[in-house]
Length: 219
Image (cartoon, rainbow, N blue to C red):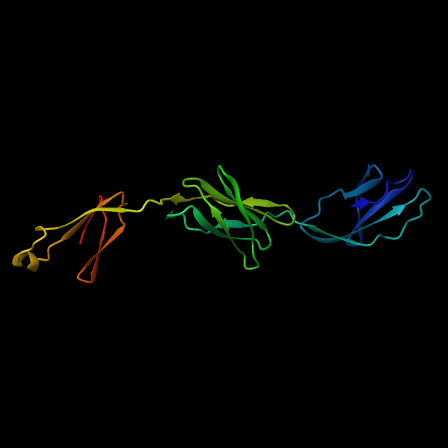
């Protein structure tokens, strides 16, 4: 607690927490001074007052109460965005946290990407520009300046469109009656397409799909 003046010789300050006198230490600081409890207060809200006793033992009235909130608990913060491969560097990072906390979205090399505030529903989001392969974290700070950092996520940006390098039909472009009856396969050859991706082929207004494996899909 700051006292508006330095105590004169023989004067002493008594600190009260919720109306109870507590052991405290006085420290002069130029034209003002401070009184600090000798024992740290647990987290919570307190009414703080003080009195000044002069050299003759006269005690002043207690000052008007100051409300002090002790908060040593770090806020919660997480990123809930998917870490799958994306096709653009423009991404909206979303997450959860302690309502009211300020969240700075940070890149491992680019630094701060943007700031959001956790809403009353415990959720936050921020549109940012990410760099492929870099780790993105969220740093939350509450009103008491306690801070916490989320686990990181890594965005993989793949903005290159897949390429279909060839389409062929078993038996050639002209099928005889036996090949038609046996349901000839259509083979799609791709370039730079990851295994597991889907290829769709439309034949006579009917759509067929197949899974790429080794840059080839067979319908």
